[in-house]
Image 1 (cartoon, rainbow, N blue to C red):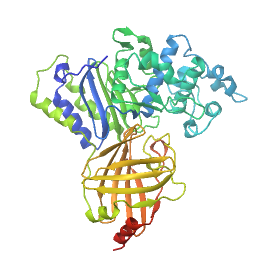
Image 2: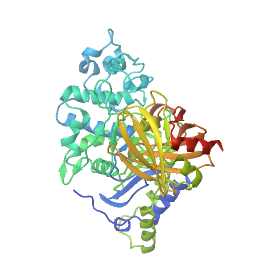
Image 3: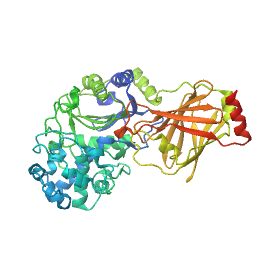
Image 4: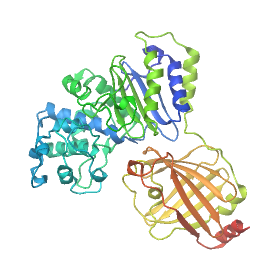
Length: 507
């Protein structure tokens, strides 16, 4: 089923309200990647900020949890498992020698509500441990299950493991015929943990329309195209408050203090709830207004995104269609057509570019593949290979960075006129925008459009060396944001072109 496209006014939303929302997000410094707004199941506004696009799946982080919860709902509906199944019965082979009383009491429902009884999460969320399930079960269950909220991604991963143990299928295999295919979603993939369990707590990637279809399904309380795929009673549980989370370490942000359901967050406005992923992956359901807002973004100001929606959208919903506002709708359409991450001033350096054209810089031994070296927020799976050298090409209005590796060569287009140039590598779209900073420094922002954030690189040239440094596009490193990029020093390969290049930088 194609999602019907309408104007905002046709579904009772002023176009100006959407413009005001976009203005607010921009003024708040929110890096937006994509959004879609639906009312009565119809899309009334949508857009992607280049180089991000509607076709490329975007890392979801913890928004994945809401999909995992829905998979558990289907399994419960089919009698494959029960909310009252105990962990000690589900994993008898993984238990510590003397299970604690609290562990013995812990059930599937407690994992769903983030109330299993842990005081802390297991190290690294289990991502580096092939026996992470045993590690989870021997981790101290300090509290009586159901009494203490702890946001626990490994607990959601355990739900995925439970589903596989009970059904023999991975999380995405189980959801494909029950959810993905009936809703017309694309091929959904999920990062796997060392034991093969799909990372239901953070590992999925979805396009913006995939998100919209799923969140609309939740807003419909399990109905799609007139069929009740998943019972309404499941959504009564999943989206209502199951446990208190006020004061649970989320600071003073009000939308993290309203109670937690089964892998869904309650919001401060009445009747509003959401699925939520790190760095701003939102699926918001306005229940009383029959509206859905989905957002892909990269920001540390998570509350600001929701506050902007409450300020500009909530008061604007009308019960009836509105008269068409041609001027406001035209301004909105033009805005949506021109969305792009903040462009970089395209400073050129003809002398530097001429000297670099064809120059080859050798990488140190054991340097990771260039795109693995650059990484990005959500770069879980390396492409593999070892970087051997980087070659620069500048010809007229076109610039390229050529990556020579032990497993092949790829050419990355560099935007040098203030906008991102795009290149597809192994099915993934990359955008790069670059600009000269003085005579010997070339800045480049690299975006893997599947990830939530990229890397700002600086190539510094001098004599026969080039130093490469990089920093994240958001002020966060470690954990899900990825490790800091190491500094790498390259050496000119030699030959006539490289001799000319060396002489240029020594002038």
